[in-house]
Picture (cartoon, rainbow, N blue to C red):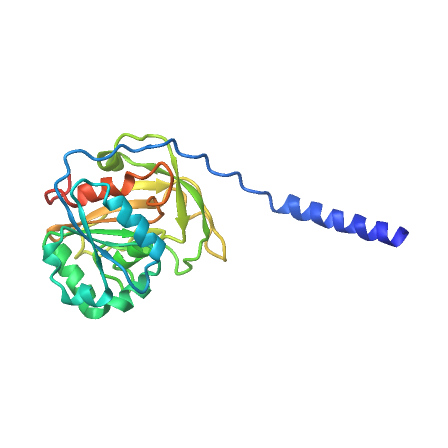
Amino acid sequence: MRLTALLLAALLSSISRATAAEPIEPEAPANPPDLFTSPAKVRLLRIALYEGPGSGAAGVTHVANRARQLPGTTVTLLKPEEVGTRSLAEFDVIIFSGGSGSGQSKAIGDTGRAKVREFVAGGGGYLGICAGAYLACAGFNWGLGILNARTVSNKWQRGRGMMRIQLTEAGHGLFGTVKEPFTIRYANGPIIKPLGRTDLPPYEVAAVFRTEIAQNGTPVGVMIDSPAVVRAPFGKGRVLIISPHSEDTPGLENFVPLALAWLGAPRGLD
């Protein structure tokens, strides 16, 4: 009995030490319903949404549902081979959602990447979410090269959780005057910094991270105040990337529609 009691005491002490060393992070506060209002006076948009290797089925569905909130909008799912063979000029905006940026790049190939670049340069809009944000960056040899950005580290598996982000003044012009930080789902999205290429315009930061997750040996202290949403011109077109996932975060249902409204508006930064 004495041995059992000693073993039990040791076990309880071990649990107590582990609990003290690894405090549970409090959950991020929930967003109020409809934190962002739906865009007004949006022209009818024709949207192409990539569906194939490197994109998650659930993510494609969520993004398609958000895009279809815009009255009269059509969403066409494009297979990898269609990106390179179909005329993208029949669309106003192309979207690459979450999954794997390098996987998406490999699937569409050199021809597909060239077609997307040509589409945006000619006046189209590009929305990249998480993996699609990685894909836009010019800092990867497999990227589209339409955003003058690179990641701060090649260690990208920062983790998943509910983060807090906050709009900048430029973000207010895109999404509205939500001044306080709000909660958004994050899943290993890119943490970027300027690449500094002189042949590409700089990006403008629309939202920044206010909290951080840094698992799996990823660098600590680089996420807070780094860009969560940026926009930039590319040729005659527009690029907007969202590192985290608004499309399936409660209260942020209008975030993607607002992004699409800007991407589909007459060209030239506001």
